[in-house]
Image (spheres, helix red, strand yellow):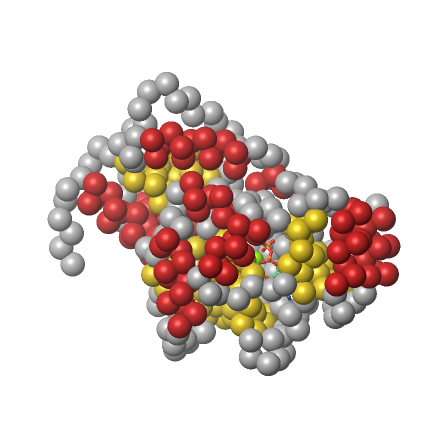
Length: 322
Ligand SMILES: Nc1ncnc2c1ncn2[C@@H]1O[C@H](COP(=O)(O)OP(=O)(O)O)[C@@H](O)[C@H]1O
Ligand SMILES: [Mg+2]
């Protein structure tokens, strides 16, 4: 097999589980770390399968322009009609909650009430509309960036005018209604090959979760922060829901991701005390929690590796015998 699978990313550590799974099934691959290397576009791209794993939070690992660079690379690949998994449209969604919510709503999927603010003044002014607790978060987020809970405008005022306030890397801060789930859990539905894989319940009682897979040595845990950076791999915060019944919401997610060039994703939702479901985050750079997967026959990275290899075989016109 001469053609390869190309993995577009900016974090070596997150690729490790995928490397292992691809090696296990003898699938040839090459990595394009777009935080480190430049891809010049003088020639045509190589033949192969291109899997985009660019992350919205890449600036927190020193790769400020990796998403922009990825956008340019994906334009080039798509110009030459290469097979791209999680294409330029998927990337656009990865880096903008505003675009995520607009698209979700167009599929009749409910999202929390959100205001988009481009400066401190508008953050302070906009908070007046919330009669109940609300949160801030970054438009270009990932790992819970900028997520903080406020009971009232006064609390927000002192945070925004204080030294700890950090705007989103794209300048857009969200103010969003806080969904008070009881118990405090969120659900993350995983998709591979645009199809539902499994749903994970995440205990959010101690804060807003980070990457579901980050190794413990990367943990950065401010102790007193109710919401913000903490790592879910501490303790047993993740649980794959056995016998999760595929429902209308999941069917809608499948339609939504297909329409938006997303084939691999984790979508997060939360349910309020009246049973109303709000979808609030789409991750096209999905990682899996190995602790939770211990008890599951279905494994995320293994499923991705199998999918990528099948796509490569298709490209090479090799018939897959089941
Ligand atoms: N509107 C909300 N109400 C209650 N909790 C929320 C809300 N939005 C986010 N959270 C919590 O904060 C975490 C991080 O928010 P999220 O939108 O997923 O940002 P990121 O893209 O940084 O992961 C969520 O997993 C969830 O636990
Ligand atoms: Mg999230």
